Image (cartoon, rainbow, N blue to C red; front, side):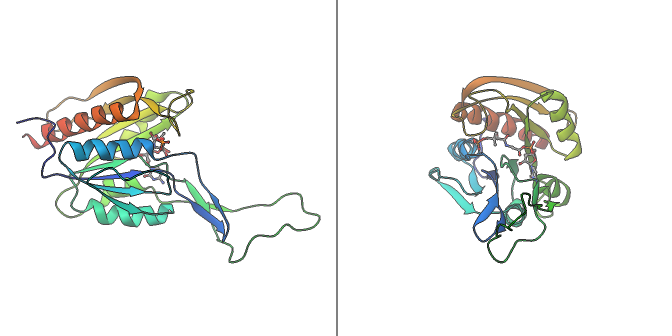
Length: 233
Ligand code: PMT
């Protein structure tokens, strides 16, 4: 059978930014548009998978046949992701999750204080969604875990480090410092790394700049092949 067929599989994908409130009208976030994650969801659905797309606030249409779960903050994304991961075969963390949130969300709009030219915000670390799921998922079995790594230097070294530290099976590293690629762009490029699993050797695949749709199709195909190799099917 086709080594990258996904019929009968459940795939969960996180996409987009998270939004961390400061007060009723303000938030901390980042420039993720959700395009890469939505392209992955579309590619997985086209392979026949049942796809759940957990998305932060983005302005994109849901790909055909994909179940979309909208969230705002990292804590909200973690809850949705944990629930979805329980019966997933493949989990892909493409969201740009805010690493920190405000320690206290102000109940009322934060006011300027006369005479104060500086404002101090105290931030606390958000939970690491993909690392939490890679560690704790109960249920059918631990999903095949694919993380992204957004780096601006030493791509391979930091990507390898994320693969190990977050206990992932595969990592998709993108150089987000390159003009025209990464955050918000139509195109992207990636270095895909995977670990050795049950007798299959580690490997790497360099994917040159191309549309996020084309890149997503290759990433999904590669993940499905590794997953099948792991299951020995
Ligand atoms: O959305 P686009 O505009 O299309 O842009 C795509 C992208 C550049 C955002 C995407 O390709 C990408 O690189 N996503 C990951 C961005 C990121 O936050 O990377 P990171 O190196 O900080 O995180 C590493 C991994 O841990 C990622 O899988 C991330 O989803 C996950 N993570 C990080 C922090 C956290 N608290 N929880 C997580 O699950």
